[in-house]
Image 1 (cartoon, rainbow, N blue to C red):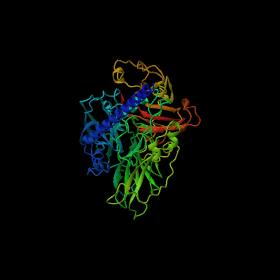
Image 2 (image 1 turned 90 degrees about the vertical axis):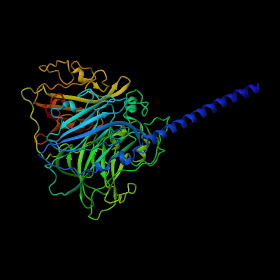
Image 3 (image 1 turned 180 degrees about the horizontal axis):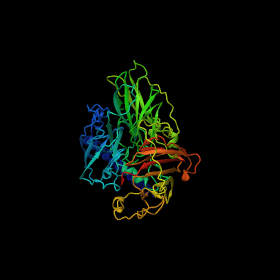
Image 4 (image 1 turned 135 degrees about the vertical axis):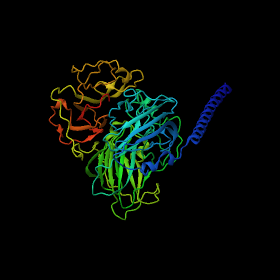
Length: 577
């Protein structure tokens, strides 16, 4: 009997040892495959991030009066790179992230041939902030304004830059590919750009900033749409916090022992230390920084150590009267141009630029913590160096001067004053309700999951119900007044606001019923923020609504504070977008 018991114990131990050996063997094989995959596909960081373009040291000639054709060719690929120290799948343009710089003069024509070399995903590119006057089919929204570019195929975008100037960017608008790295800068020059006349700007630099995930974006989306996600198994509908914050495509990652909240737990990532990006203005001069937030989820607060003042001169490509601030809140897709000067004429060394997640804006509503973000105080860093030979690992003269504000919003709506003065479009008194809408934005339960809703509409993929195709047989009754909740004959996952009166004023009130702030971006039209206030607009009966009609701020991406409303106006003069 004892022999039988011992035999069974030995058999049990043997199976445990066998399983342990198999797990060890599988882990070794996976590590070997990933290491080989890393070596076979690695792009040096100085090639992955094109510093020459980000520093706008291209020798571009700024001119006016002569329209030129600017041609580019983009190869969109999926590769494995490690801009944050962790090797992961990325979507790149010509082997870069951020992608190649598009630099033009106002009035130029931009032609971009996009070759989709991803074997199993379609793609499109949206030109964020470009109005697409009379070229709405070039806007790049998959299923809405164009069919996506299939694997192995090409599509050529052609866009005329009409009466626009300043800082823009492009990004994928199919699936979540820009989360994986498909984004890049656009700078539109204009000799007539309205800059402060008493400031000698010696250099310009682009500063991209945004959250980045160790996991691939498509994997994150698949998990997010389930009742239980990998990072929040007990609370559905929670968006993942980024693992790191990149500045100009890189970040300093110094501890590979921290656990990622998005990377699969059964497969440890290949990790290595990484370095920061640095920007090098000319010593003793004023530098023009073009700031862009490319995040997928979080707004960011930008500061520079030992630089207590930043001067805002442009917001979403609109020149504004100079505004001096200690730091800048940038929501997703927003752009700010700021002037930065050294405090003293003898200033040397490197100073830390920080892009920080305002904690109270997100963390109270996320039921988990990010170990990596906690370890770096929820911020990404890069260096502003006044030295001719900067060292990205040795910041000097570090004197934080700014507390991160927790009001979770941009500047007060009435603070920025556009230099090119334009009054708000007047309401259409003949048909006051036909181009007027009021919509509600909120986070609510939808079956087993939580979703963001605009009126009764929430996101779902459009593989078999693309609005592009469903709109062709539609006969929309422009003589009726169906209101803002009508889907016409579109599926319930597609919200439609009909604007039956062309070349008339459109007014849309947006009520944010959620406690969190949220960005709102409009394609094809420069929106004018004409009113705002706490609570809901309620058809204009809210006594706390503040109006600004003589010269309202114009931009394409605004922040709507939690439990508040904003009213925008634009002219319905760019059909089908």
